[in-house]
Image (tube, rainbow, N blue to C red; front, top):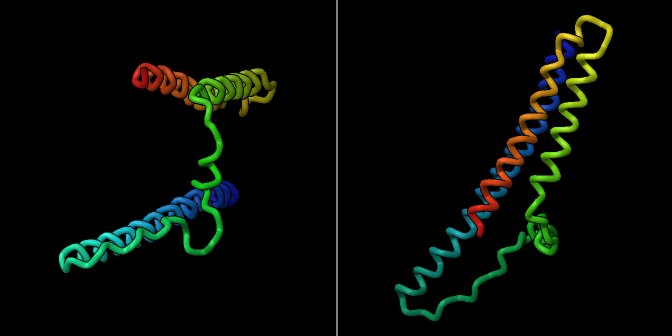
Length: 134
């Protein structure tokens, strides 16, 4: 039982840490934009020429993920490919667990259905967003 708890904390702890970092970076960017907005509004109220808009990149000089991803063309059919992968992985996992001769894993075959239904959800996502963009 201790190994299971450790595994859960390890996996979800990293996920929570990444979400927290993402949230804090977003708040910092929001505060910076709010400060720029206030500065520009005060300049407008006083009749001073508007200051130049600063670059919205991170001040650290490092390129952000958005800048790196901005140059990459994303295929609009990505949900189809990823959905197919998840359906196949889920079906393979379910089949492998169902065919095991041991009794415990044999009863756990529905675990693979999570990936199957996630893949089907990606297919539905593609179908719904494809018709919306036409």
